[in-house]
Length: 435
Ligand code: LLP
Image (cartoon, rainbow, N blue to C red):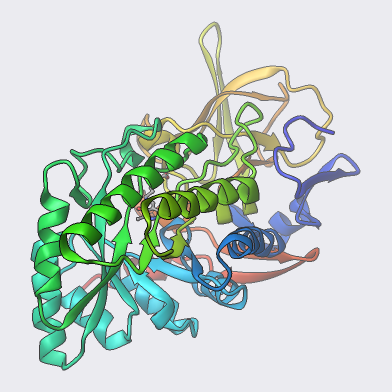
């Protein structure tokens, strides 16, 4: 097998790349490039893997919430709804999309460290199940708005357990100095719980934490479980507060290159779930409903992005550049975090890849790089198709219109067939709000 086929849904037929059973070159021909492809069967398989593993330990007292910031459009919400997952949403835009897809918002958790009054009112009116609050200011705002609307709103409090998840800075969120949540260490978490227990029009149903993203070490989660359950026990002793829901966030790592480990989702879910059961038993706590919020690991390797090569520039003695018809506008992750990716030709897969180059985008900016040190065939030329693997998470959802470039369409692949899920933006779309 080709060592660059880092996910099981990648194969070759007649030396051409096949993704989720569909010929990538034919799809590029049909829909044009740049093009996001997503494999519905694989997304469903990931959802099932998470849910089955967690239910095996917690029965019905659990939820897998898809962290839709990883990739949000209507068809995704339809798929996760059909798979029995809940949703983590972070904005009115995600709530709107979720609702438009027919998703039951009672099964959605609304995150964000700074929800405006308008966000809060919109979410309550939309029938959001749970707010994950970031602190007392938000608690009081929700209480005020819920009261005006004559409802009692269920909330969870986001806790910062004080953990370094050993990942890149932009996604390390469990440390005490994080912009998210309330630290246990400073006494803030306890103070907000105390306040919540006497605040009208809100019910504090549980605690949440999310320590980081692209995490591979189970130890990080085991430490988190210890800290959270110890805190639950303290809150029970001091205030007779019973944590009904414990939400441990997302963060499981995925393979961007052959050197990344292939994290076994079911096994890791089992480890985390069993740790919660053991710690609760040891501390004499009743078992909470356990929630996990995976985003990246549900969709990342269910996506690839296909490009057409344009200018190829070989600066003798220095560097080779292969430019494509997309770039940081459809995938800003190298520009933002220096993220690694695997880049492959779409055709002639067995041709020697004997030229090392930087694959760059078409934006007027030197930082518009998709990946450095990419081996491609030395005769790669204008018109050839290449693709970047593992782009299903945080690519479409982080895409921009920088340089007024239209965002690519998303096409879903299912059992070897295909259907469009998001249309390609047009030039008219780009100027439609201009007055
Ligand atoms: N829950 C909460 C509260 C989160 O903040 C996140 C991610 C997740 C769940 C899902 O984490 P995941 O399973 O996807 O790792 N733009 C960055 C990722 C930011 C992640 C933000 N929060 C990137 O492209 O790497």
